[in-house]
Amino acid sequence: MALERTFSMIKPDATARNLTGKIVAKLEDAGLRVVASKRVWMSRKQAEGFYAVHKGRPFFDELCDFMSSGPTVVQVLEGEGAILKNREVMGATNPADAAEGTIRKEFATSIGENSVHGSDAPETAAEEIAYWFAGIEIVG
Image 1: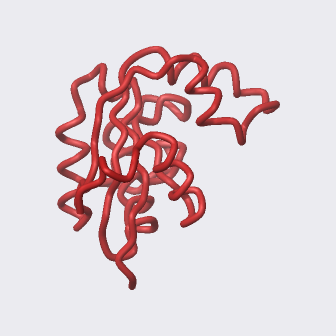
Image 2 (image 1 turned 90 degrees about the vertical axis):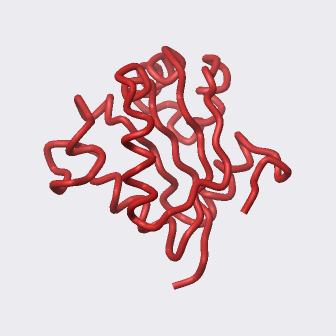
Image 3 (image 1 turned 135 degrees about the vertical axis):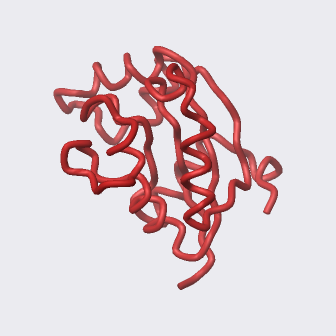
């Protein structure tokens, strides 16, 4: 597998419960390295921009309200097959379907408040990383 970078976000439900360190530890234990990280409280406009792909879907407004309700931690992760590895560590979107030991199985409270977000493909990883980070902020 090739060395990749992916985008990772710790959502407001998890930061509110002070789970940032536990989530980052799971990512690092899986062989991913944090090469950029910052805590942000996104505005409604930033949430709408980040989730623009979902505009028009029934859950869009609720999603944007939630994502702008408290701080998030946005990160760039690096590692062998980082995109797939991050998605495996996160677990299924619905915590009821997530495998034991995954972030969502352990920490998510619902399908909507599922603690983390991660890119699903190289193209979305590049877009999502660029949305939150300037190249100079990523230190490999």
